[in-house]
Length: 174
Image 1: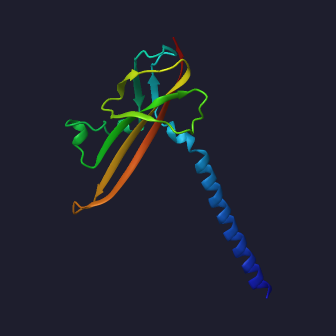
Image 2: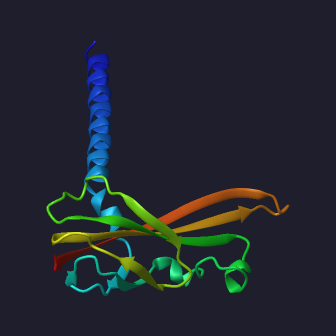
Image 3: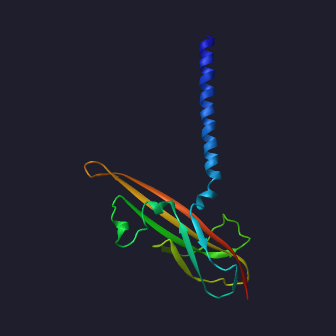
């Protein structure tokens, strides 16, 4: 009678340990959610102090791990020669927010555009009132890999993406 009782206790302890391990993994993933928007190296050249209602132009340059695999998708050229993978980069430009706003607050999208080069300009950046604001943008770098079997039939498709949040604090004066 003691052998079945010992076996039952061992099974219960094994299953309870695995369940706890899964819970710990979920917690780790939710804590690293903010880090998932910081995956590219970039430079951004908007001035620290700007004049209210004056349009500005800024340049963003970035590097991605995908650069060694394929160039951004373009009409023609080397980027379309390999049918097993493609890449699309999009820049999202959001309405500037007061600098006291928390990072998890909803942003208002102004515009989005496809990026053909790793250096591009953002035009018509305007701050409509005085104060401290944050310029907000997002670079989304997506890549698709396709796999074919020996008969030439598509057998797998895999997507990867890298995200970079662009934030810069700006003082707006008259």
